[in-house]
Length: 387
Image (tube, rainbow, N blue to C red):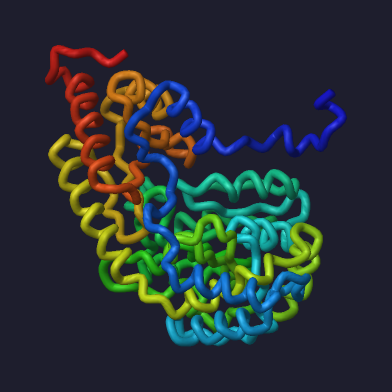
């Protein structure tokens, strides 16, 4: 019967991250370092704003683009934090960054268009591109120290190039694109006139000097689409709050796609979003930094190589020297030690694994202890053998 369905759904993949996480639980994993969800509870300030909104009767339909006061707060936040000016009419409130990214891509893509994707990359992008009947063109930046050069980018650009997707800090690596890499994209956009989707969901979780995202190039703002989420920095994953920023002419079309997906984001949760934008995330980021440094030290002691994570809450060690695919590596690790990590295959990087450290230290320590024992068996430093 599946032949009666939309054939593009058959080409798309279910979330391999969730698929492996579910498999790991089924296999009895005790130490879960897979999903990228903050282990903090949503701060009470945001919860109380939501409660007050409910008590005030904010339970009716809202504007499709989102509550005016929330969009005004976002406009002020972006000016204060990222030094860019977006009018509330250039902002749409979405059900997390997942929807904002989906809306952005579906608004611009036609069948046959090409999307440049810097891998390793979050798998959402390629599946939405598939839904749209467009083509993904991957650039493996792991071969270039996780940065981008003019020669490499120009080699990927064709007459069909419609957009490049940038994610900085990156999921799964935690790396950030340098100002030089962003300049490469900027010059290419001026030359070839294609869109840039700047996925900035982790741009408040940065450990050293925070750098401005691609939206800083306001002289080409007609080509820039910013997708943002409140999920990661404010521990609000279940709230499903994000936003899309773009020139008004793009937003007017994107709102049509958004309207027929969700009509409007829940009205009362948006008051919590207003409060979040004034919340200081320093304490959370400091906690992530402590955990990051701990994981880096442990992985280095195990002899595992990894790119330096500048932000987010992931580390992406290489397993190339073991001669195992990432799915097999991670599945054997679950069997041997009860530790669940994410195969790099999920991000088009089969010679890596992703360690998520947004978990409590006890879980992190136990998980890395198990990984260390497993690595030792693979290196022949233990009498035990992996299953």
